[in-house]
Image (cartoon, rainbow, N blue to C red; front, side, top):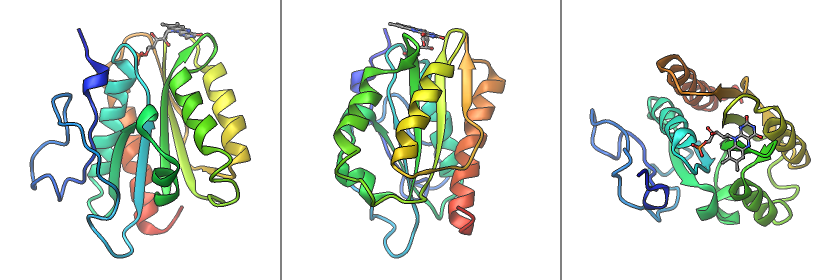
Length: 191
Ligand SMILES: Cc1cc2nc3c(=O)[nH]c(=O)nc-3n(C[C@H](O)[C@H](O)[C@H](O)COP(=O)(O)O)c2cc1C
């Protein structure tokens, strides 16, 4: 059975040794903070939750895409493990969740509950994007994420990716492109 709890990874392709694939489900749990690339490098934080593994696969694909932009420092992190410091430390965000009962997962909601007020007024206009795994809808999760994130004054910079039902190679490609697009936009200073 897929063990979500055992998974946690982050990295930049540069750091992981060039040419190797980005982290996989076997990647060791990481506790690092941004800053390995140093300087004025932009930092992209991918925050997600997955119970059954599909949103995890989406997150992995987003991460792989973002890591193609080697001048952006990209970190993939579970919602439950993500702190206020992590949020403040990043320049942009990709948020991923399954849709549960017409809403985001409890884990992503917990992330917002913990970080909303401590980051209030400090994230203005930072870019974000969203991906959602669901069976046949996704609109409730998206709508409620957008409501909260509007209050955080983040800026939606890419079309949300919603994967309904089984994940196909095309869906994986959309997730990859999402990661690529936001990382490239951050690197170029567009976002
Ligand atoms: C408790 C629960 C509630 C769910 N509610 C919805 C829902 O409201 N709308 C929907 O489209 N899918 C719903 N689903 C299906 C999941 O969103 C879908 O299986 C998703 O891909 C799970 O992602 P995961 O494998 O990353 O956990 C629900 C699943 C569970 C377990």
